[in-house]
Amino acid sequence: MRAAIHFEEDASEPLLVLDAISHRFGKVLALDNVSLKLQTGEILCIIGPNGSGKTTLFNIITGQLKPQKGCVRFAGKSISGLSPDRIAHLRIGRKFQTPSIFKDLSALDNLLVAHTAAKSIPKKDRPLQFLKAVRLHGMEDIPAGFLSHGQKQWLELGMLISQSPRLILLDEPTAGMTQAETLETVALIRALCEQTRCACLIVEHDMRFVKAINCRVLVLSAGEIIACGEYDDIRHSPSVKTAYLGTHA
Image (tube, rainbow, N blue to C red; front, side, top):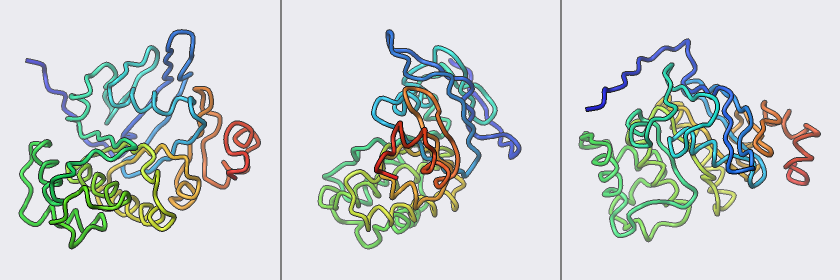
């Protein structure tokens, strides 16, 4: 039997540390000496052109890939080389771009399934509280397949948060949303992170979202960090404009 890894909360330590991460696919250097720190409750957006290393970074954090160089530390301990299952058990959750929900089940039953997967027993009113938090109050009996695209995204976010994660990774959470849904998603994510103290890494291409969520922004290009700072600093950076933003700014 594998020994359990125990993590103790230390407010003085960053929750997540990536230390000089590098990874190659053949001759392609997908990540080149990437380092970052994320505090408990912090939100960080990661932007960059296609092929810049964003997905590889997420895969390394969640254990789908082992970094060839560097180390990933979570709550002060190395998680490099742990399996995806063991990393998930440390309460690190991930949401992919396409919603992964049970379309034939009701919105409420989707949340109950998420609790079962997390091996937790929810208090009677907790799933309803999560539905309200993700803007689905009154829709508990509606089959998830009948929800709008934005509502499906919110439901999956509720399923993720209901498992009490300490860190969530979101891959383009507003893809395909209307502008109104995008702004609602900003408010939703900020509220959930503030209330639960869950940290959040977000890969996003929608600069309206990045501007509205008002957090630190990290810019990847060809596997390297070319900038990291507040949105206004990033959008005026000549190197960022050349590599990615262009007319987006």
